[in-house]
Each structure stands twice: as C-alpha cells, then as structure tokens.
Image (cartoon, rainbow, N blue to C red):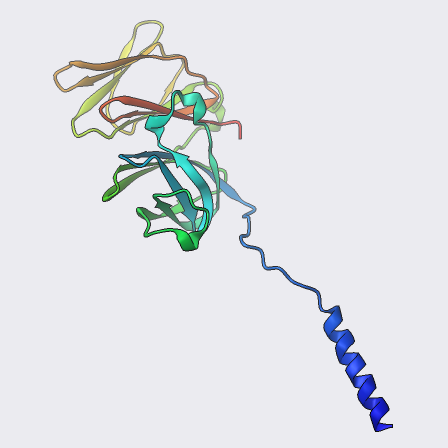
Length: 226
C-alpha cells in the first residue's frame, strides 16, 4: 500500500510540473495615453543618436538634420507616454540598453495627453544642450493657418523677417510661435541688417514648422494629422 501511495504522489507531482505554463515577461509596456514629441538631432559630428524614455527605446537611429537633403525626409513624431518622464540620448544606433555608453544628455520632461512638443539637441559630444518647447496649438487654427517657430542656435543675435504675398514684413527673434495666413519668404538678418539667408517658402497649414538657424538655416516639420 505504501508503495502504491508513493507512486501516486510521484505521478501527481509530475503532472503538476507538466501543467505549469511558461510565462514570458514583456520587454516593454506600451503606454495607452500619449503626447507627441518631435526630436531633432543637430549635434556636431554626431550623425545618429538613440533616444530612450525611462530606459525604453523610443528611436533607434535619429539622423542628424544637417544630413537630410530636404524636409520631406524628416517628418517623424514619437508617441511618448503621459507622465513626468526621463529622456536620454546616446551616440550610437544600438537598441540594446546594456551596450549603450554614458548618455550624451538626459532631462526630465512633463508629457501631457495629446499635446505637441519639440526637442532640439545641439552642441557637441562633450557638451550637449537641449531646447524643449511645448507647441501650444489652438485647435481652431490647427489645420488652417501656417504655424512656425524660430530658433537661433548660432553665437550671434539674428532676426527672422517674414514676408507674405502682400509684401508685409514682420521681424521676430528667438522661439516665437507664429500663426500666418501665408508666407512668401523668410529672411535671416544680423544686428546690422545684413542678409544672412533668404528662403522661399511653400508651407502648409497641416504642419508645424521649426525654422532653425545655426550658421545656416534648417527647416524641420511634423504633421498635425497624427
């Protein structure tokens, strides 16, 4: 009888072990609620950067804006979970966090539901800086008027002049968020009114534009139809 009981217990234990399912822990949990962030890489001598949110990969390989042939190549916006969050950037294209070196730059950002943001990384590998703007866009004007922000990353004071089809010229300096009905040209001038660059514009109200001056002009945009 004891022998029978022993065999019965062994069979019970074997069956119990056999029935336990294999549970795989997910590598990352995708948030349900998002804000929208455009990341721009303008770090000198850094062709690609990787971007992480709370140690989870957001962008594996963000190309330097200076390497893009036109703004049509760069129109990606990232969904970032709503929270007070840590964002870090690295100077490589690896998706494995264990292989990453010390971050080039880290900062804390408050991401709110359905809001739009632009993060511009600039400087060099030894000293990276960031401009992080919330693009507060009135919903009534979102897809009608042209929306742009001017950013000066040069060492000198400059001015952006906007000319519309009626040849009306308005002068702006840094980080201005502007709504326009139409734009013909944007002229960049120094303090002595010397023209540094003049750009012919063909902009659409479906996008938010960043006009960035860093010894030359870079234009980045993202779609508001996301």
